[in-house]
Image 1 (cartoon, rainbow, N blue to C red):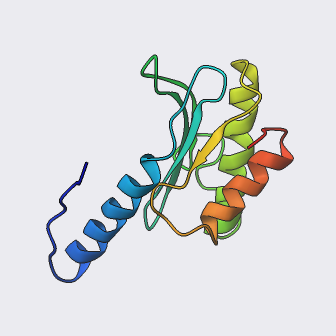
Image 2 (tube, rainbow, N blue to C red; image 1 turned 135 degrees about the horizontal axis):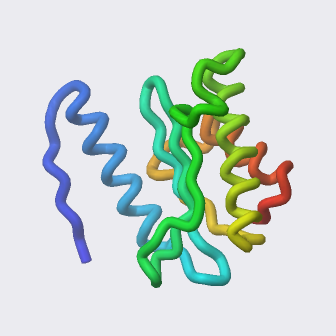
Length: 127
């Protein structure tokens, strides 16, 4: 099935390209009760990570830079992304999740996305 995303200029072109990449990634990745999907959403200022069971259609755990424990923390955006990764892994393990599939959300696996994933792995979440 083909998905059409309108081509535009400037920032709208970047958003459309991100959406195309995310659709391409989601063709192959889906969360199940055994291995839910760890989806990462990145903006210029914040990071949000959610562990989602796509079959039941519910979020099992989430964390973001807007959480009280992380907001206003020390360090650059990559350091905050590491804190988000550790926090979402801790909350997922508390919800009974041991392994996940990683959904980078159309973003390149580098920088803050990689920092979040590495921190989640270090906290004991299996990808």
